[in-house]
Image (tube, rainbow, N blue to C red; front, side, top):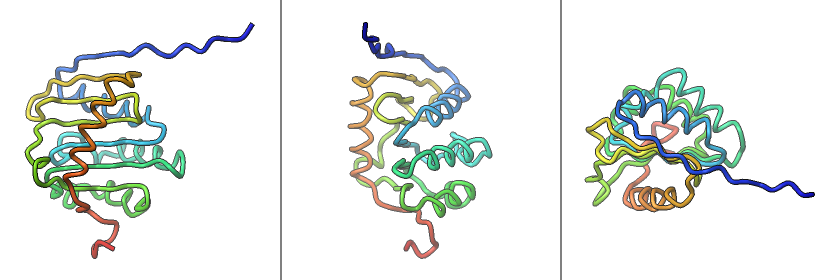
Length: 167
């Protein structure tokens, strides 16, 4: 008798604090198998430069040569000025890590979003507020979030580079 493969059931969790959002962010980094897409106003809320997040992102990028990290922000100042670990990752993985700054319509987006592959995401509808939703193993809902991220990415430009000259 052949074993039947059962897909995991989608999970939805409501988050009410910034700490829960940061915890969900770390969880998604660990779940990502191929791709991480992150949109945030400036990354100051995600503690992206912490040693733990640096190691999680580094492990993700080392896991496979085709893993990709896409970051879109409204303002790159925090990344450039206060995130040496993230910039170190960019230097080390410049062929697989991309940091863009929004422009045009995307510059007015008020949400935050972290996508892990095509199955998992955490989203804050209004970045200034701590409330968020975490969806796991939910390919259907993730499709809409991927479209949202693609719209933002399409209205952004490469803004932080591995070298100071941008080459």
